[in-house]
Length: 337
Image 1 (cartoon, rainbow, N blue to C red):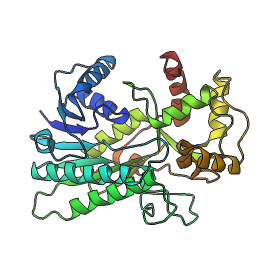
Image 2 (image 1 turned 30 degrees about the vertical axis):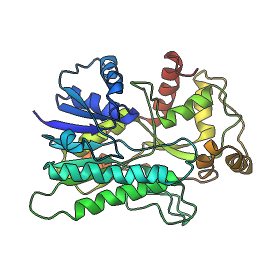
Image 3 (image 1 turned 90 degrees about the vertical axis):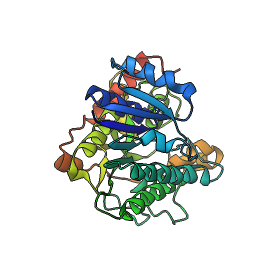
Image 4 (image 1 turned 135 degrees about the vertical axis):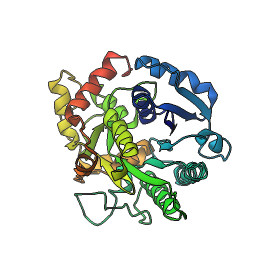
């Protein structure tokens, strides 16, 4: 039986990856920072209607060396999903960069030592779309400029971590080199399997509950979490993915379009007006939690890619339908309080 290591087992994307692997009869090892969170994963799989007989959980931390060799022992594949994310601005960029880059080094080097066939890394469109050259349409060939002074810490952390992953894999010697494939999701929405509702789902919650006074002039790509997980599995299973990056983004929306969809679906608190760019940027200086969002204001960005569809046969859901489904899911399950 094929054994797969999934890092970040308690996370929004990690849980969906584990669920799909178990549904396809893989043996799964999931890493968690503390065994005190073991029940979260077990309960999430139960919620998904899945047996945990082929699931084991081990303690491993991105910032510590201990545990990674044991975690990856006997695994043919690794899905390295775990990565730090802080809503708002960290006090120092190293709060994101150090665990992101260090985590990649620990996981990939342990995987290489263990003879893993392939690692699929969860990166982000954040490692692609901050080129600072006026570009609006992005592909897998684009890279965020991590050295640019205006690149936000999160984008910088994802870029440096992904570049480090490619460096490690490209530096391998011998015939049995571990392959690497990278998934770069846009805004990830969809049903949750635990208390971790996902960063993009938090924004949906704020829109449908009227927590935001208006719509920032922002244009971003979106994708369903179930499709992000399925793309990880496709990249793991197919040799055509080896050495490739794949953007996971079904389509883009302006926030005003999202609010309009929500109002049409019965979420009357979704705002109608669009906030002036200067107001959102000014709020970013007052409220650190909004500063990262302010970096997107007034910019039109297209990230939806045909590459995973053509190469891997990926068939994502319509992002607009996923957004509305997510709003209903959050409401029906009492996750908007």
